[in-house]
Amino acid sequence: MTSGVAARGCVVLARAGRGERAGTNGRGRGGGRAGRGGGWDAGRRAARPSPSPSASERAANDVTRHNVDVLRDLVRATPRDVDEKTTTAYAGEGFRLVRCMPHLKRREADDAVSAGRVLVNGELVRPSRRVVHGDVVTLDGKAMDWEPYAQSVESELGDARFVYLKYNKPRGVVCTMSDTERTSMFHALHHERKALGKDVRLFPVGRLDKDSSGLVLLTNDGRVSDALLDPERKAEKTYDVDVDRIVSEADARTLARGVVISTTQQRDLKETVAATLPCEVTKTGEKSLRFVLKEGRNRQIRKMCEVLSYDVERLHRTRIDDVALGDLEVGGVAPLDEDEVNALSARVDARASTPRESSKHTSESRRRRRAIDANPGGWGAKMFKERDASA
Image (cartoon, rainbow, N blue to C red; front, top):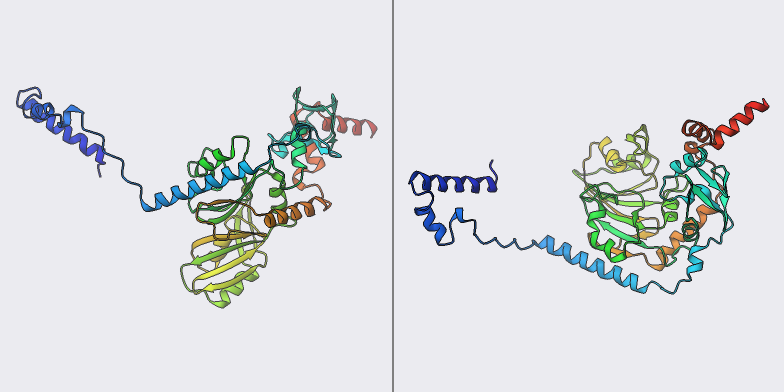
């Protein structure tokens, strides 16, 4: 089927053709139309007014305006009389070296230190090294201004430098702040990000499928993400789900006990076939279920329902830990209240006080192997050389 533009182009050619066949060079009947200012060949037709926005577009615009007003009020309420020395000088007892390079991923920072690209006060160090106020950290010979970042990271949760928001993500929006995806939150929240200012770099805590809707937490405080996504103490999440047919009580109990599904890890694309952990599944209607779970495998609820031949028609997240979506409208953004921030703070503190073992992905031996591959002059190669000499 030809587009409207192509069809109009055909009309232009047809009219021009008739003028040429009449031997008038377009100045006959067609020329007369042009002389009156309304001919197709004159190119002077007034631009058509853009269509009026639909009801849904007007509603979305209203939500955006409300979001911007809320965030501007939040910015105005933020204290401005912050002592510059307090915000720039690190006052803690020791900050992990690999965290001094927030522009690098954790593994990249490990590799850089292990390969000898990072020095502390001019000396080779290990990734486990902690730095204190006054230490000079260099990456590839360039000094890192690490103290302001370290001080902000270890400041009290709820500090004025941090933002904690809830967002009712509409279906169809991709849960990422990447600007390469036109349907991402980066573009969906363009005006909201502008209202907060260029210095506030929000990111979502966890993910929510493009086809799903509901609660997403947004913040610029990495401690919240670490605490809520900690594999050892993942946050509880609640989802309301509508399926394509009536659900039996027996099937609801089967889903709650766990079913075997296949999921793909987004990090390494490794496929995992395993039973889901027991969770709470209750019927809220003939074709509706409520899932309360801590596990967070890729598209888990949809795949659980598929095992029992149910197609998910709607999946809506209503709660993450102690943060509830409430009556926040679709596309709406709102700051967390004091109780919600305090609940997050308690979770962050609990995680910080729990002794942790090294992850298998960043084990000592693996870091050494990567160090040797990246730079034979790094600390990993040096340690292996010393060990071989003493053997």
